Image (cartoon, rainbow, N blue to C red; front, side, top):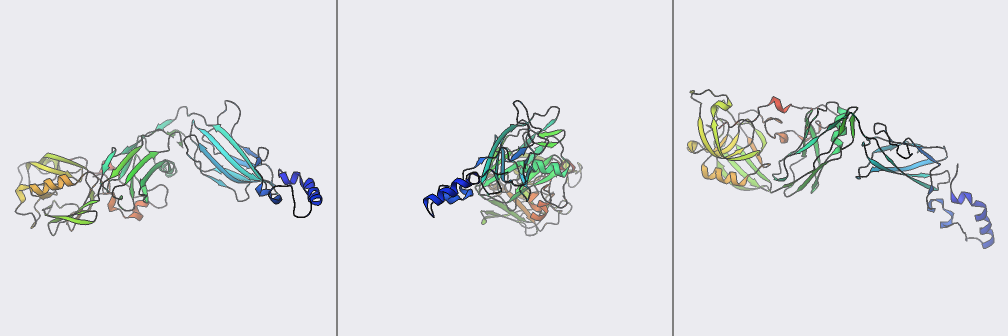
Length: 420
């Protein structure tokens, strides 16, 4: 089969060359078939999608484009839906077959542009449009992004909560590819499957200061499994402020604050005493409470014992759900800077606690070093995400190989008033 314009007019071209003299031709661009305008390639290729009026393609089946003749080859295929989502695909080495490798969306309108060439190298083109069918009895996967829109510290992970469990790795990969996180400035980041219904996204390093982070889903209408399809999700926009990091050295009883990597304050503190040691590692500010009633019974200390307490606490900045705070502790001022006497919290005098409370916000970073306490949990007790090395974080993605170190958030301690 041949569709080359020059191939069809080779005799007339030759006669014109003889009549007009050497070096003069009437076949545009010196007879080079690659310079010809693309011809209609409709009879060179076939599609596996229905094209009749009212017919819809099955989104469960991959899109396929095949060259009808061994003399013709496909050179490029571009397929996208009406929302601008592109379909990934593979072209065989001989150019005779292209097939999609990412799922089609249900109830979507697609435009497919196919470029071809014949045995003379002349280009052809065909544009096809089709619609996909609507799921009938299938469930829809709802995705809820977090936290709520606003400004956060550079340590704030993005979360995605699913309303159905997704356990199969191939199905997780479909979901993960569709959940998009873009930032300005751009950074390298990845999702981590915390559980079958929860994902966290963080960069390799902390977010840049004063960044804008856009989160959205391309999952709507995409097949995840035979009975589960993607549903709509509300996009999310976050921004970051200055990089704020508080480093508490439990053995030196000092908390040092850095703004954009420059030291701005040093505060004498007390941390957890033996048996109640403060967790080591990086934590993220979760919330702030001007007043909290802290009771030992909430962290397993029986009333009437030597360690029991029931106190009003002010300027409380929470860093774990199990009750670790940075807060005012006027009762331990004499120990601050010298010894650890708390039940796990980081205590300081009231004026310093007020300054810390006013300076730090959700998403800012609090790191504890040189404590005899255990390591901060990676998940389930706040955001310990940054305690995972990047290579280990990448193992939690369904798009990479390796094992996952996941933990169900429900297995960890949930919201407790305080550890004092």
